[in-house]
Length: 467
Image 1 (cartoon, rainbow, N blue to C red):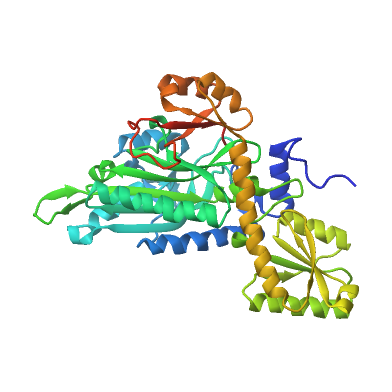
Image 2 (cartoon, rainbow, N blue to C red):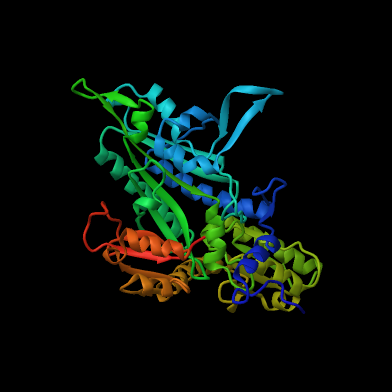
């Protein structure tokens, strides 16, 4: 039988497209660069939303919603911002059959419109900090679209905050990046990353500093998983976001913005997926356990139903297989979807009071008594979660080479990441790297922590090809 998926080693981009299609994650939309997220792909995104949302709210941020259409003149108020986003803007010039008096931009990000309303809502230091988050769609005209990774329209959360001092703003930004994003990436997606700051040329347009988390995909390329931006007072000055301090002085706020998008779904696929398809970490899996009858008869069907009910009662997200075709075909379909654990139930198993449990990540099969199955399944799911993080960390570390020059970094970046002193790169080295489609993904400290300034000594540059 022909291979269901293109092997990763043969053609990784084709493998990715095969997985997205055959795992029923998404389809291309009718307009170039758009995507239709299918129910299974959206269920994974919903799990990501839920995990991120509870963490974001725990920091004191509140959810709100701002308009999709933003006056074009808002973007001209912050010079770096409009210059950075101009090539990606979708502009509406007609509505209701008439030319609009003022052109509108379809939201690419919301710093400008939220800045406008922050200026209305903030009067005094008592109104600070103001911490907002919204779940929304955005449009950035993409020339080289790829489902989940780069699309002209995508879904995300974007947080925006205003603070009385730079210290408070930066402190909160680090809380978001470490306690929300990094915690989610490590403990939910089982995706280790390099944390660090972007170089000046890679910063968000209009920011003083951009902090990132860079993941390594299974082909050795980098994917920017999330970013957090210290906007200083740039947007506050542009939109007159000011407050009266305790001593009665008028001061500009210090603002931040930060976001995570459906790109994380693509990152999940490429961090853990193998030649059989998706491998979904249990904590983000919409279906943690699928129960499959080996033979379709009434006794087996009844047992499958009881097992699913028992698992659900124990808090495990379980589903009975209702597919068609042979047992082997149905197993293959669930493997492509990456469900963490499979329970196989047959007449002979029932007679012996046991079932077979199969791990998606390793393919390991174990026989367990039906009695007490829920507890055994829950423990095995935790083991899968932990093992996926270990495996991804080993892959990342083994494909990261410590080098001493830009030439060596270019060589290492053909297969993985390079790590070298920032002093050995600098702006001239960054130019050389970019000419070869390689970039400095971030600057980090030797201990892996996030620098406070590019002026720090001993900074290391993480260099890679990227998506």
